[in-house]
Amino acid sequence: MRVRRNIGIILFLLLIVISLFYILSSFNMLPYLINNQEVLIIDTIIIGFMIFLIFLGFESVIKESSDHGYREIDERSIEPDIIDTKFFENVDIEEPGNLYIGLQNYFRESNNFKELIDRLLISTAKITKSQRGSVLLYDDKKDELYIFRTLGWERQRLSIVRDIRVKPGEGIAGRVFLDGEPIIMNNLSLMEGFEPREGYKSNSFISFPIYKLDRVIGVLNLTEKINENYTKNEIDIIRFICNEVAVFASFFLG
Image (cartoon, rainbow, N blue to C red; front, side, top):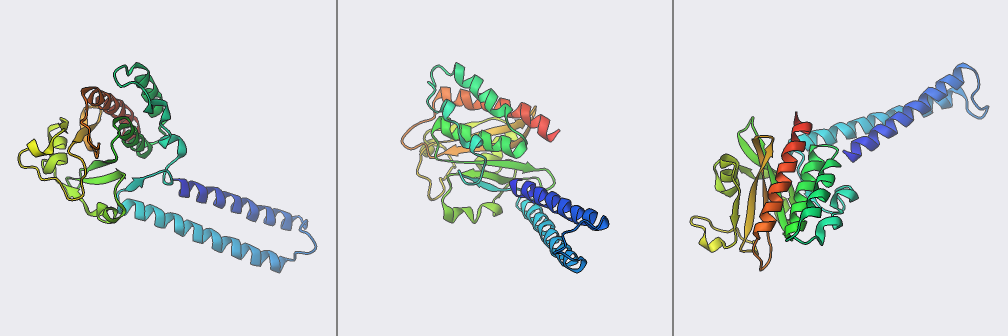
């Protein structure tokens, strides 16, 4: 989004420069050091640069479309105000009244759906002190879930993210999507039929449905809460956050 905005600004400025050249030329007001042939050369260079920027913009859009806009969240990839959640990091989970107000304001500042999901993943991970998380969204054309955002994944695993697809009802995320109910597990060894993937350090995880009003559109996953269990208060806060996201998602997705 930021790249396309910057390209648009550059193109606008270049159009102003070209227009100014032609206006000055039509009134014979160009500096004597610049003749018409030199103006033509400058115009050609500017137009060529514009075509390059337009191509760069299209290439960015095509790439984003091909991988569903996937992104690993870190401090370099998103706006500073999205990742700055210090206002609720030290809130007493046992008395979360002020936290709820802060969260409502935090999500109200979202400018689009992608930013809303960024805020969802970052806020829930920070509040629960989860080191790894992901958001899967539903592709109704292909009837499958794909990974849209990740947080805290090891670099060697990121290369396979774009290929991960989950059918409704398949695995934990697929079950949560299909049933519309969260799954909270604080001891994976007690969960029948579930084998933790290699590389997981935690014995607990959360998988929560993401709604748009009353329709499930994706799944939030959190894990790597090292040596700790997810508490009832944390689950209540995540439920509150997901309810807020459901309302705002309806504005962005229609």
